[in-house]
Length: 579
Image (cartoon, rainbow, N blue to C red; front, top):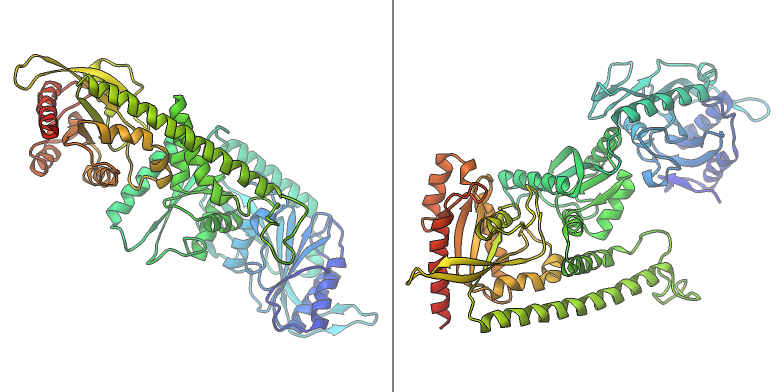
């Protein structure tokens, strides 16, 4: 039995049968619609006193029937047979409308979102008569034909009646009122072929490097954060996307008192995101917060492109940056732990092992097999991480037996820790103006003057992974072997990027993460970096807030001797405190 979509609660069985018979209708592929089909559809809509939509493929077959407007009955984007900015979907919609007016904004938006070949709106009269032989006629007062047009210079699409619909990169051409015979005379195949050629030319002109994701960022401002904090978060997310290798095309924002449990943002905003992603040719939407598996599935179904959250972007960066075997091991563990709860609903192979009627089967499905394999892999990786943890503990014990004091470099990502390590020890650790440029801890020998004798004193300094606001729990767990370098060090250098406008927030984020460590870290020295990139007002504010801090420029090697002396005092204080 063919499915009818939309509002069916008040329909009689005879009316449902009339709608189901529409699936047996077929019109010629080279015409938009025929007068007979349009009149039959209008007659059914008149009897129901509700709008009705039929969706036809290019062979003229009815593939979907819905009771409601084009917006209410639209096809989920992931169910469209073909979808992309360079072509149309291969489906046209014939819809009835109870009022004598051109297609409204909602109908045109639905057409753009689905990239329909065409939209025909039939304004019905509310009356009619049946011809001898059963044919319905007289129900259609006038009809409108709408279709998309490509235009790369404009950011609106309009119709001939003068209505303007913002936030799209397409024109929508709407005809003046036409008779059914005039619409039937349209060469439909010629129309869609010429449109797709134009879209293809526009797509090739706008196409960028295929290796780069084209990204739309979506942020939600809630009552829990200030507008300034929100803007800092969005800017940081854009940096994360850039570091991961994506190109940010546009950022969309919404202010909400609370997060929508199903889609994070409101229904209207979801449509705006879908329209923006489609018109800009985006293939990825990134949200500024963690998404539940259900939210991801709902958003992908309505937007039509892949949706990821902030944590997944960070995990992707870590996967690219990890160089050592230990780093790759910990990144894989974090990714698998993130992926496991998101397996449900991926693909069509669903679980049959839940018990109860309809759930028993001859064996494991692909979903259970994948979940079992991932769980085994996670267990194995956790064992290897434990072995890595034990190995690093033995190395630290060996250093402690030699009575060599140790210092750990901590700080927000991109604060310049690796640059400072290179400047102090003449190391050649990779550095770049990127978030999470280095992940693997690097330990080097540092010679500083003894605080009492001023004689050279050997110290070990370790560069650790950068911190970030709301560091994902999966990364905290997976990188516990790395983070133990922080807790086991005698003292810490807390490096701060003074040139960043949110440096005070960065300090709080790092301190919050350190406070969550299972072992309380040693005493720390706040060191402000990149002083060559700030003005005197920023320096004065930082000196007022942190009078005991050290101010340096690691790249310009400014203030390093002062840092060595203060570091010697810090180590002496830490060692004396342990005694």
